[in-house]
Length: 215
Length: 189
Image 1: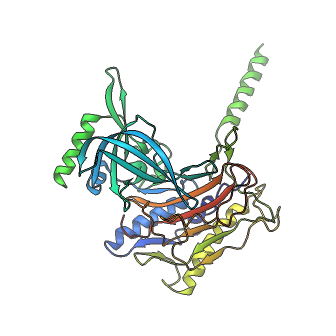
Image 2 (image 1 turned 90 degrees about the vertical axis):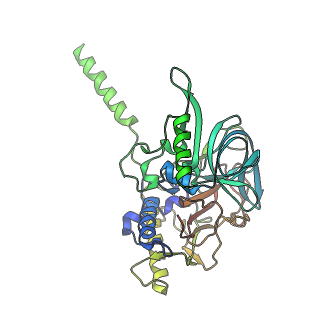
Image 3 (image 1 turned 30 degrees about the vertical axis):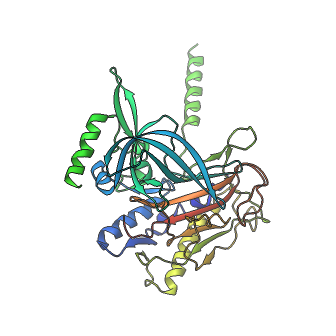
């Protein structure tokens, strides 16, 4: 058996010492931050956890927290390296703007990717294929690119399903284990609160209703 | 005939038991080699000559706090955090049959180091890809979008001879060259 990565070396921390090392927010709402970070680190370090931990957010929370929401089609990706760090930059043709304002093409910059010599991997980051139809919850970055709110949580794939080939939406986190989220139960199985197979019309209605309440 | 039937059922039961996935505390990840080949499992190149080198940044963010038994900001707090990290590492290196067990390969695990620099993990300018495996509680990163609490970035070699920073050249495809673990330091979730 090999030791599969440094990140795995810290896995049993939570079980060995309880929550001995707990990072908490101390500025606003200290109690909430304390609890969230405690659970986050416990889950991040628990044996069944993955190396990325998210705060579980409802569709309404995601919508309210995100400045730009678009429906877009993936055009393709390039890899950008600085020193030995690797980012994947994916271009999207914007088809509909649901919230905020966006250029005709948005470029999403996410950590990780592959060059000829190196592979950089981060769990929980979405990857896209050319032609994919998606709804993205985006946040602007300093260099004019965008990132995705809460990574896989802010990524929704559109596909056809059912006898009448209706357009439906599935969140990337639909297949995640609850242990990858703070507030998720420890029981096995997929993340039951995620959007899975929701009709695009219903999905758009929920998002726009939230925007109306929290513009 | 009945005996053969029972034997077949017994063999099927054993096969089913063997195929049942065992509980694991880790996730196997792979790297597709540069040369046409099957994906190689990501792993360290472990030996006494190239032990696992780990460090953590003792720089703690002001927007968040690390809760410990020891008082916040005290030297004892840093010792306590280091102790927790060491305990976690020992749990892995104490596993029988692992090639990271110092009982089998003396010297295969280096002493956990520290650095007081704040930004020593995956950095927006790329300087975090340094071949040093680091845990950071105070690392700014644009990748911390709302809802992302903690993540680990690993870099592996696609071919022998490749290196990252101080990692030294890889001996095989799939060799881990750099691995950083970051906790959100913004205090905003």
